[in-house]
Length: 489
Image (cartoon, rainbow, N blue to C red):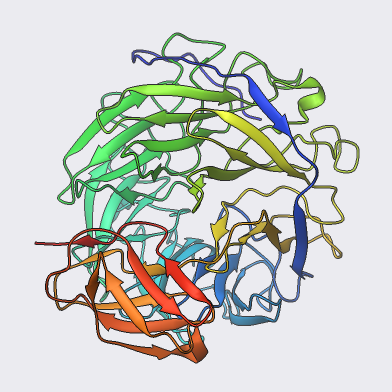
């Protein structure tokens, strides 16, 4: 783990709840193994579930282009299809080393690559579900790379239809990185340049998230000491909300937030830091990471500090963000630690965990190398109720895996997008929707059509709809959305 320099400034409320529950191992199934030819290292990205019910993701390297990486599709039962191989052309004009994907409202997937051909530093691309890729923008196309470089995080589509993202490097202050917006047609606007006035730097893998207030929230991995949490308006007005490690080592509030945030149903934001906390193994004097929550105004509470158990069996180094599941709890992964120490060296293979909003942590699975190693990306709860994720290494061929974790949660539906005006076209994702007899938006009935072999419903926001849950009545029961649908004015 990285060593940090001393932080300056900042304040936080520190509440460490050292509550850990160890349960019998949950049911984890390896869905697919990567072998180099079909990609290597699906790291630092979360899978996305498409409107067809399948999952889509990227590998950082491997594939037909050597170390360029791939884009893949995988069914819930494990049929993996490589949709695109990066860097098969001389000079890699299409980019290399892709980050995660987002499916936009036009049905196309959008993403970024951290590397590109000579003189460039990454790209923004779009790709159809069938695998046709178009490069929309190449970074470092401006003198001095003032437009940024090396975008390592996934994009987010805001309610205005535009995509927002970050670069870890470049910008007007050389290495600070940038925040940008880009239209679906590829017109890019640099909104903010990091590295000025203690605002942090280096948003490596941290995707932005749009809050219910319409603003964008994110993290920087370093700068101003040990990283920051910030808010950005869609037009680029920046506010620093928190600086990590304000009092210097041992960074009780955490350090190096490499992942993005999630806004929970209580309105607060939850996230992780890869380092920090007063505990930790001997190889990291700055600790082994934390889970925290933060109000939209910036008041931060530390919920859990990793490596609080002997030999770090509760995990260490969470480089991925959290997901709030249908049971109201948060689920995530640590890249090291766990009961698999020895199978993956002295640092351990990593874990999967559940943590309540109050800070009670349960270790759900410890990887053993044969079933994966280094789960550096976040989890996705599929509409069947199970969690899906990847490991960056390990598995049958040592090149990483796709896995499914069953913790007993039932199926549900999710809307795509999560907000819209009356009359707006909406897709509802689910499992076994064939034969559905009713769709309601907070009680208001909608006209609908079932498609994609029962994995999706096409509908529009009905007149009289208000913000609330979406319900779909099927022959096997009523499915409820995992989050409230926001009806825009």
